Each structure stands twice: as structure tokens, then as C-alpha cells.
Image (cartoon, helix red, strand yellow):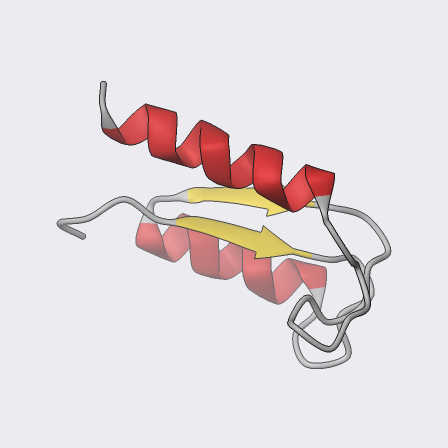
Length: 66
């Protein structure tokens, strides 16, 4: 893959289980961040201002400049 990827996953996502996300990350050669029991992570997840997600985004952005 010619661009950076990080898969963000949850242990209890009803649309894709953790093992699927981890296998996909291995196939793509990218990182996989398991964030615990958050269900399906999207705009309807009611996570509010999500510090954990924001911090992951900031870390990912910093990694692009290296």
C-alpha cells in the first residue's frame, strides 16, 4: 500500500469482529488499534467529544511528518 493506514476497531463491533479487523491489518501491513468495548465506531455511537479518538488522530498525523 502506498499510503499510511491505521485500522481503528472495537472488541464488540456488530459489523466486524476484532479478529477480522486484525486479519485485515496484517493483510494491509498496517497498525490495528483495539479500543475496547465501544460497539460500532461512527457518528451515531454517542461517544461525544472523544478524547481517545482525537489523540489517535493526532498521533497518526504526527507519524505522517516523520
